[in-house]
Image (tube, rainbow, N blue to C red; front, side, top):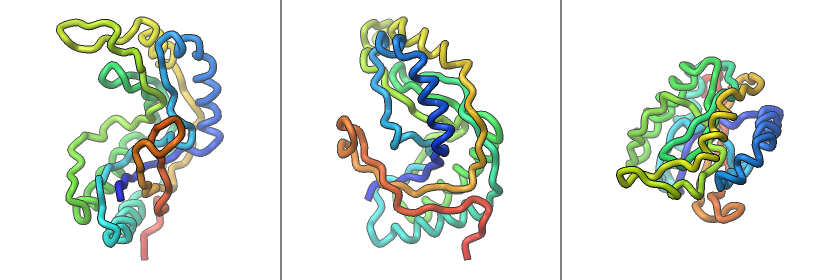
Length: 200
C-alpha cells in the first residue's frame, strides 16, 4: 500500500481558497492550469512509499506517537509559487516551524517501518492546487519556461491569505495513482492521529 502522512485544512479554509482560485480563473485558463480535485488538497508531512499490509498498523501507531509529542498549532494558507515550472502551490503561514517539526517527526517514525527514505526537505509547507499543463511552450537552455499567463497567475495568488485554523489532526493516507477523478490519484484515509494527544 502506497502511504503518506498529511494535514488537511478544514472545509471553511478550502472554501475560502476555492473562491480565491475562482477569482483568477481567466488567468488559469490562459496558463493551461489543471486544478487539483478538492478532495485531494492537503499539506504533505512525509511520504512513506509502498508499505507492506502487515506494517500499516505500526506506521499508524508511529504517526500517533509523532502527533502526540507535538502541540496543536495555528496555520493558514498564504502566498503562492510554482515548482519545476509546472506545480502550482499555495504556501503556509502561522506556526510553520511547528508544521516542519511535525513533518520531521512523522518522517522519523516512518523510517522505522518503511524501506523508503523521503529525502525531500519539508521546510516549506505547501498545498498543491494545480498543474501547468502547457509549461513547455518556451525553452531557455533546454529548461521548461512558464507561460506568461502562469507568471501572472502566480503573482496574483502571491498576495493570497486564508483564514487560520488549528492543526490538531494528522492523517495517514493511501494513494492509488490514476484511480481518482480525471485520472488523478485517489487518496483515502487509512488512519487519523490527534496532534497533542499522546498515544497510549
